[in-house]
Image 1 (tube, rainbow, N blue to C red):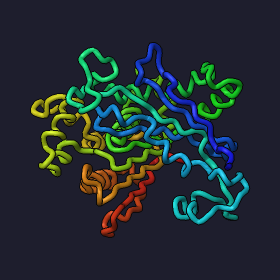
Image 2: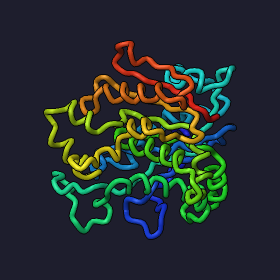
Image 3: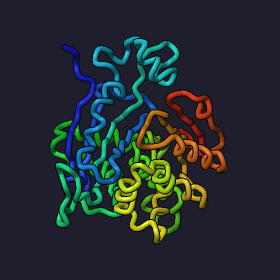
Image 4: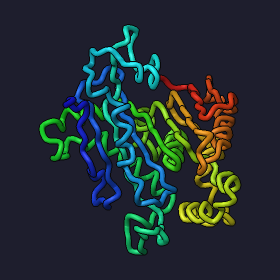
Length: 325
């Protein structure tokens, strides 16, 4: 039986008083992380409303993100790690280097979904009557809490001091899937843009976010709806539920491409990574193309590498900005 390589602590409240969805899951590697170290903040998708898609959706990915249970920090990498991580997963000698201080998967409050077939929401449910930007505020609150309050969690036992030091000193990589990517970019753009005097309390958090990763991300909700006319009513339903009526211009609140075009910046964020599959039936390829174009047009994006025009089944874009990792 292989030895575990990480410990998990689930359903930790990140605000007080907290609803049942204002919680996070903390996953810490057994082996010490190398310098520099990063805390990955994962933000799940689910159209802002699906109660069955939660922070637990990252669990199947954890064995690929932490070293294999059969490896020690000085073990040679098997071929799968070269395939997944390339030169970024090992040093020059091919040995494992773990730079992940922690992986934190965040729950956030959902918008109403009274027609869900098995778990319909009710008007009195404080977890499922959110409106934009409640989701962004929840994720920001979770990150702030990690930086200041982790040592107060009794469930962590004697390790809580070490965990608190790990997460408070490490830098942050925001990773979002689907609408989770919308939330991730909206938060990074808000922190980078709002640098006025009344936001001085956000300065430290803004400086810690070094990368934003969008996986099958939604960056323009009008384009999303128009590309899926067979599901028009479904897309309109959840988008209206999140932002308000389209007729009043409310959908633009969540338009990340417009935010970038309006001049919002991402502070000291060093890297943006976008990933997309051409076989995704729910989020069209045009989303990553539009986002890629918006990033290329910005002075912020000093360098970009991508394979979006190569016609493969999947594509990715790596964009280096003005900050440093």
